[in-house]
Image 1 (cartoon, rainbow, N blue to C red):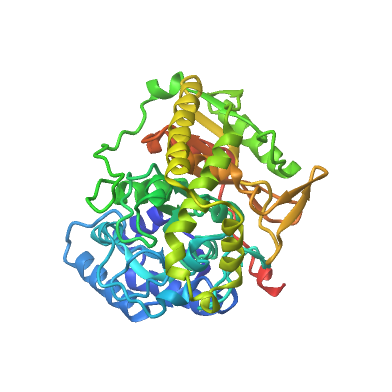
Image 2: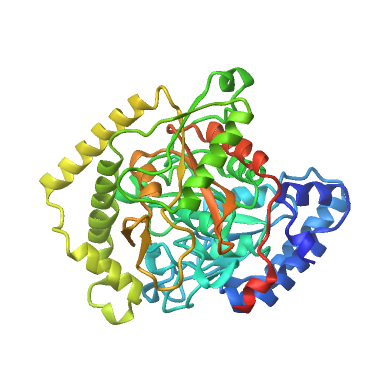
Length: 475
């Protein structure tokens, strides 16, 4: 029943409450779709079919007894396999954690269950999450539902593929340098990278400490912005296990707040070119927001290239130093992609106490400079990446007469990890090859609600969600 599995999550919950179908029917429809498509997509690493069926029966009984139902009652979700789900593998795509079973639910998973969500299973990642594509020695490669010859992105590529293909109604990814937003862009779905600490990263591996606490977050992925909003509201809130946590109440903007909002947009960063179709998608989104009554003007903050360089000093160099002891002496167990990443890190001088301090000060100084510029434009509209979904194994692309290298193509997402800004992705158009192209909406820290409100306006102007055709699996 593909039509049923492609309903928005909020519609699924509503129609369950209206008894139009049961949680058992909904779960069985998703499990049937997973059985059909996962051998081709390789989105899931573990499907808890019996557990999902049991959860569905309990949800159906609660409905029959007239109990108060949560906002996601009976809705089947998936979780990235770097996040703890009790009884499921939490290996983060590496042989170094092979067979590791989570003993408890991460807080965000507990919150989803409390809202009535049903967990179908968990999804594939690159090894230790260190890539913008998904492949590892444990479970292999995840493919894009729009074209099996292309990647679904990384590191939340399995999650994006599951949601885009209708195998899951929505779910949770994580993002340290585009790992929610790039897969969402590649796979034609929506995603939110929140402010660090807004949704607790407790129960995520790598742990939310050091550079990962400054850059890395967990966040919702879904086919619609309305679904992102509900998932965000359910999961948000502080937790002692996240060092970046803060008690920020949910605060959706009023009409008065939006009336004077200025949105700045730019088609490229002046350093890494983007495809003509990506430029066009940003213009389409800007025009859509103007028609919705927003003030939208060309604006590009100064300092973005420095943000990209500083991001690498945190994520690449400092992150590599944290993970290095885990991989040392186990090189034979590492995937080619992680070895490649480790080679890029090894080409850099490791941090000394002085360089680490200098990097930290430079980051904070740059954040203050860019946030001052964003006083006039509290919301930014820009590309997600330089290119749409690439073919498996590609490492460079010709764009506007220039070669765009693998590490440069995702700078459009990396800035906002360095800055700690929330950023959402909405699919807007398609390339000539029929690949999805999304745009990115970013705001100031702790302003997820404003970002999602603007994202919803972009989505509204785009029209209905388009699902990938099953003929895409005949590549």
